Length: 39
Image 1 (cartoon, helix red, strand yellow):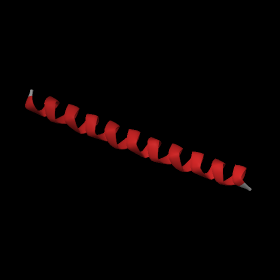
Image 2 (cartoon, one colour; image 1 turned 180 degrees about the vertical axis):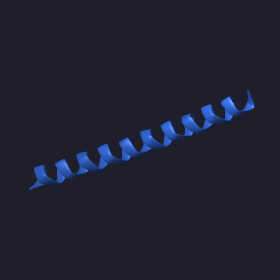
Image 3 (cartoon, rainbow, N blue to C red; image 1 turned 90 degrees about the vertical axis):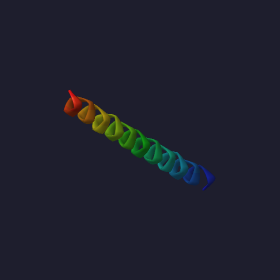
């Protein structure tokens, strides 16, 4: 049973890391769009 809980925790950590990557990528994309608009 502890092994099962450990796997769930791993999945949750993976999801949070993935969502963090997505938000940072979106932020970079928005920054690039602004720079392109300035030029």
